[in-house]
Image (cartoon, rainbow, N blue to C red):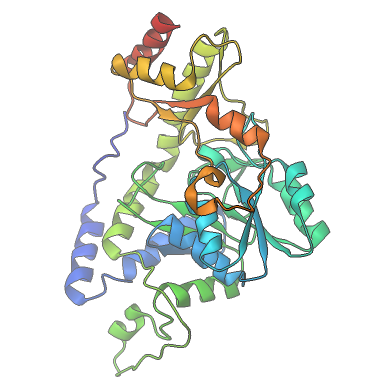
Length: 374
């Protein structure tokens, strides 16, 4: 099994991180640079920019795309609320489109129907690690002159048509939260092939400072930095980056184990009378950051009743992916959302336990409990 709860540092990385702390480089130092280079190589992109978390990554991506008041950005409601929030931070208007209930990813037809002359961008979410059909969205972007970027919070290590998620659009934003496939305790990443974007992202993440900390500390001459734009404290630390480098070494092994567990779940549940395993399109290789099953209309219990029954037997589950449009920040007297597929898919789905260090015995316990209850 793969231990990820307490990621270990190699001796060289640990010494470098400790030296970075003592030298004052901890906020943006050599380990961050190494981590960014390693991520860019893995994702097959020219650049990677490390930040404090995925929400800040999404916010910076919105800023770099020059989103603001008067602009509309299409995204799914069926996603963690940070997806929509990051758009609203810029003053742009969130426009929710519906999803394909089989994949929980945006439905390109629903997205195209939501496009107006004010639409400036589409944020595509690779929900719970399953890549969306990027070619469809890139075609929409080209057809309507709209920027495409990705909320890839759960998708580091996933692949679209054989290519790692990260370089298909303007930018892709990843999460390194403890619940994700690999973690730095907390953290985020933005990958891009656009040098101007990368430069702008690095400027914004560090207060708009004209000279990075690392360059000032390494200089043999006094350097006085300038603050050229309104920036943010969205930096990743060297300690986090050192952990990230060690986690990255295990990424493919972790993803392979998650895929193995998911395949075992799907094989066991394929004949279940009212629980449906996830559908994985041929073009996608999912990380299975979560494993979602759907209850059919003939289920003898509700989703929440099943979750409680499983919890009573020591099997913890989570509800299906949340709907942002049902939360208070997106409610108003004039709000009129028509998202039937999102609402049905969210209400009828739940996430079964799946983690890289999960044993076959753990898996069998979950399946046995489901069999006894259903």
